[in-house]
Image 1 (tube, rainbow, N blue to C red):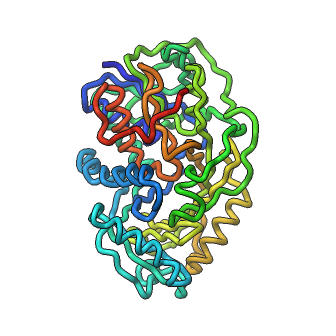
Image 2 (cartoon, rainbow, N blue to C red; image 1 turned 90 degrees about the vertical axis):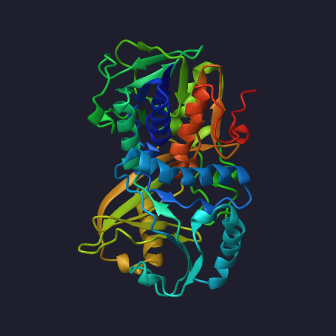
Image 3 (cartoon, rainbow, N blue to C red; image 1 turned 60 degrees about the vertical axis):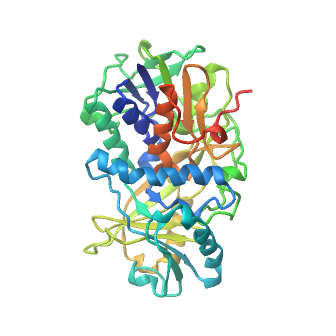
Length: 423
């Protein structure tokens, strides 16, 4: 069976991997979108603290977390996955009671979260933290390197026969795929090119046509432990401005198509005659280093509201992210960095002298009406997007769902809550 996957982020890569394992002939189209969320995300896998009143969201993210250990074993390479635990921190110990109760309620159905314990001096586990904080430790939480996961999935798919091509995929009204590549050739990339290097950024600043809803925030403002309310207005205008398509269109033969184009999914699917309310939510992230300090096994830091912090190897600490509804504007801004730095230092003043080494920005795909958007649009086209801030948690598993749908198989969970409304 021939399947084209439009989008090479973590969902598209996951779909390509699972399709290839089933023997499908897979072509992945890497559009090189500027602001691709997978390349920017930090990689927190801790679903149990979020969506307390939204079982559909929680089911998807919880299954996504469960999918990782087996995936790590299958891939057989380092994708930055490590169970480092998460510290839920607050100035007032009373602020931890609600999330403590949530964790106790969920633990019988999710024993992988581990035994929840109080931590009297959280700075012993994450030295830069303020000594005024109280904390709960969730030992089963993990961190993962989103870029490494995505690249490993694509490498594995290519090793099983998949092709990765660079260019802009356009759908025809009947679901055929036309590929416009920078040089018009549509030639496949070599396996080592699966990281998308060299692809021309495809989108400039534009506007988002769809305002957010409370469910799109992750269960309502303030309902989830680590979901801040978005800042900034949703600007009007078109859902994104693509660069002019160059070269002759190359048709890609496909029995099925998976559209996993992140925040750009609505634009890709418009020729099918459907309007999908998918819009971008910007996140700005800062990377800093503490020279000579081993940060590889520091736990994830999740304040009640505001920035997360997590350590990676090479003395690196990641702080983020802003939550901004500003349309297709993948820019690092002075105001965004100021927000991240101020909030980060409030929680972890010991980072004051850390060296800023990198900034990243990503456009998280948000589906306005519901928790995510996964399901068939037509008899040929399947859509998989809308994971918002949970792309690195649920992305590979969502790719598995999309692959099952494209092959005509029963998906691993009931997708009714995520099905697109095309009426």
